[in-house]
Image (cartoon, rainbow, N blue to C red; front, side, top):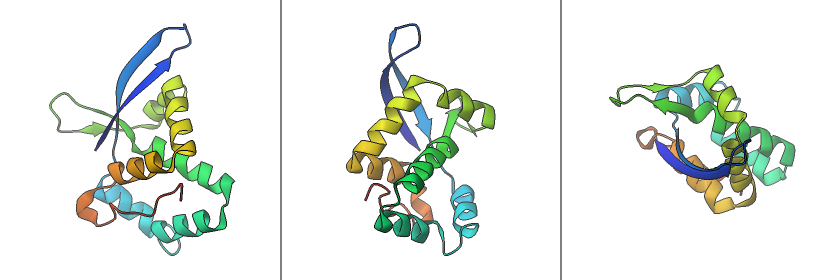
Length: 130
């Protein structure tokens, strides 16, 4: 699980600093890997190698929104839903995160590695930002 502190200005002009949580569990990664021809890591590597910017942008957006969720106070669940992802995507915090990942290859690699389950054996997935 990745806890990301994001500084942003909300739509009322208020400066905010909030923690957001991102995680993909083993089942989610397995589903993504098995539902992608050749596997997710291979597909990402091909897109990065070809410098297909529109596809890279789509992958970033999909990964951010698939990984976003809210941790329950007792730590037993990490709640994800389309409604939660949509609500996050409508914030300036999402915009700040997206721009950071799109413009900083090291931050992008750290994000991808941070959301991947280490026990799945893909924690060193090729960096999307190349």
